Length: 194
Image (cartoon, rainbow, N blue to C red; front, side, top):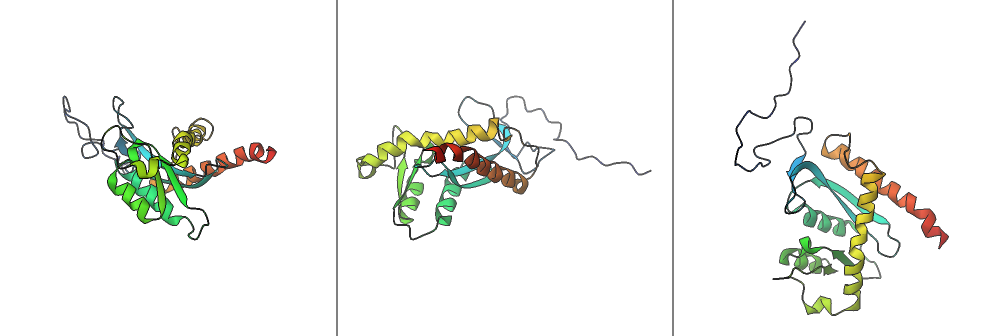
């Protein structure tokens, strides 16, 4: 009987005092997952990044995507989703996002796409100036931008996305988009009651 071959584990190396990175560590169960640290003071975990575009009036998710985790995936994917939005809308689009998006290149790319960047300002060296912040809509966008987290919280607690059983970007992406659609369906009865 032939002997089963197993996937090799990470090499036995003494990492004492060294930082772990995607170059030194890979998941044995899902090689497409990447180490990512959400914020300073937290540990890095192997994960993917889910992205969602939400319409402020209804609170419904209008687009979703999932990518490998890296430091620029959020901005890249936000631009991709904006470019997928159907052109010719009578209303000018605005995009309300947190401080992580406050980068000159991202703000310029949004303006080139005819999207008003309602980006929360970093305390120093912000790419957002009075040209944007003086408008009433900016304050409203900054106030409502945090509501996107409700959909992510629902996806983790009710939708089973806290630790998915699927492996690989494409399978996890499909599950994430389906979960965001289910979140919209869960919100519909409340919206229709008003």
